[in-house]
Structure formats: structure tokens, C-alpha cells
Image (cartoon, rainbow, N blue to C red; front, side, top):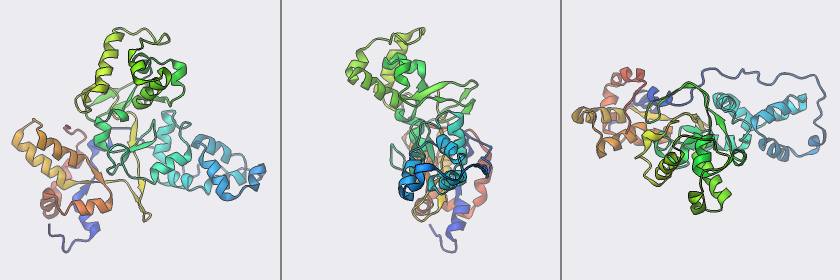
Length: 354
């Protein structure tokens, strides 16, 4: 592709976009935390024995706290407030990802993840599953994920408390060992559209399965155990147990439509790049043109080529990855000459997926 005469910023402006049908398919938070999150306090400025600790050690201790505990500590006195505000984890999250903290609070997961754990995810940009660039955060485990893995990998899915009890033979007491989230009512569409009007208690499928293995001693013992005595009475329990067993054993993509909570546990999450830039991910408009052009020749069918094209369309990239990618993207050549071709598509909120 001839890129002569275009600066990197001009190329990104012409060829990149942030697809609404992907970004609105999961948790979206419109309000932001007020800039003055920690009120001034008139109490003593001493934090007791903690005052004697080296700053590095105190930061390690504070980063081991969850954000709710961290904010409560900051309200203790002026010195505590100063120490909390000096944390990079606090500074970065409050400035660049406040909506993630709101989502963690609304899903009641805020107390399950240490500030240092969330910050570590902010400093990374790789998907926990495929190691490609990842623009999203899976809240129950605080792991980065990309859109394709979020829509297909079972390790990035959530199930109800009742389903976890029935299928893995664990009790409510057992489930207290792993994070439990409360869904936020809304319309979700990762892979397919699923509306949820009520709040539901959910757990990570991966964590529930690991818990079941831990409780029963092995995968085989867990699969052979009957329904937990503490599990509620559910109609067709055995059928649901068999279905989930097959769901776990089968291929990831084959049961995509069985995911009742697609997108309910994930949110957009920026990343800090090595040179200090904070990025939210760039999607290639040329890849969208490629999939649209091919789609017009095959109708609504999805063959292997269409699947590959859609996967590229769904893939977010860092700035450096994007500038490298568009050199070999056929659709990007057309879009570079006709940048207006992308504009009407930015209004769409629904998109066919694999």
C-alpha cells in the first residue's frame, strides 16, 4: 500500500474505527467518578506504625488491598489520603479507567481484586487465552481478553450459582471461596443478543469447575458425583447436568448460542504501552470492508473464509500493530482513498458474527 504523504496520525484517522456493535455488546458505564474522589479530612495526619515503613514496602501493602478498602483507608487521615494518592495503581485507574471501578462496584466484585492485580492488567495488553492484543477485561477473574475469545472460550464465561451447584456438585458454602458477581441489567450481544432485565448472581465457569475438582479431589470424581445435597430443586436437573458436561467437552465454537450471559461480565479496558501511551485499541476499517465485500457475494452464509474475515474485523490492535497491519490489508487501500466509506457504518450497533 502506498502510504507516502500520510502521517501515522492521518493513517489512523482514515483507517481505524471503534465499532459500536462490539463496544456496546458488553458492560457500558456512562457516568464517571468525580475527580475529587477522596474528600479532605481534618483528623490526625498520622497513620501509626505504618509511618515507620519505607515507602516501597507501604506501597506493596496498599496494593494488596482492594479498592474499596483502599478508599476507606484514605479517609482515615490526611497522611493516609496522601499515601493512597501517591500509588500508581490509584492514579492510573482513577484517571484512565474509572468506569472499570464503577463496574466492579456495581457487580459487587470490587472487594475480590487487589488494586495491584487490577493495575497489573492495566499494564498488560495481551489476551489471557490467545495472547493477541486485548481491549477488554473479564471482571470475575480480572483477566484481559479479546472479543473473539470472549465470544468463544468457555474459560471466559459465567454461569448462575444454581448451575454451578448442580453441575459441579458444590454447595453455597463452597462457592463462597470464589468471586460472585451480580449482573447489571441491560442488553448484551457478544456473539448473539441476550437481554437481561434482572440482576443475577453469577460465577466464572472456569473457577467453578476448578472449585468442583478441588472439592471432589479429581475431574473424574466431580463428574461422577450426583447433584449436591445443598443444590436447589431444579426441573430436569439431570438433563442440564448432562448438557453442561457435553458443553465443556465439546468444541468452543459449537455451543456459542448456549451462552446465556455473553458479555455480562466484561468491559472495555485501556492499556498502558511500554512508552507510556494509554491505548484503547484500534479496529481496522479495511478489514470491515473486506468482510462486507465478501459477504455481498455469499449472502448470509458463513464459510471458512468469511469466518476468517470476521475474526480479523473483530480484532483490536495497538497503535504499532495497527500501523504494521494496514500495510498488507487490501481493504485499507480502498479506504485510504475513500475515507468516507466507513462513516455510515459507525452508527450500526448490531453486526453478524461467526
